[in-house]
Image 1 (cartoon, rainbow, N blue to C red):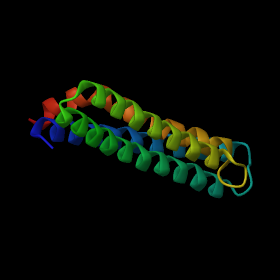
Image 2: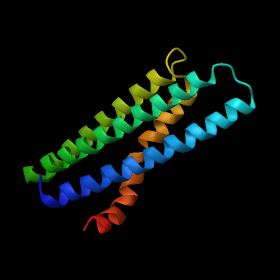
Image 3: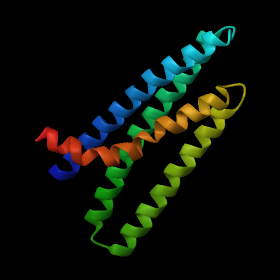
Image 4: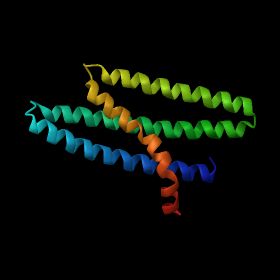
Length: 142
């Protein structure tokens, strides 16, 4: 992996981490206030389930980052535009299918419920947020 791609990947991992830690802190506080205000029984279990969903989303976004970096490196090194386009499209579809399958599993009532699915989706969005934060983080890393 070339130095520029490594630097970008590092800044995106940092951006994803910042976003997901903030999401976990804000969501835990919000759920705690909501559940205690409405006298929800066993609310600690619900909070833990939501946070586990967030952590799963965070892990998926980090795996997605590395998957994209490896796909990009393979596409660039191939020196064949048609192969590169097909490879990037295929890998993108595979990542989307994996994301959706995990979302379906998490939304299942027996696992984490709808709020767990929402927390997973919000957490996995850290990948997109990190893309916006990456240039600013790279400036700080220099």
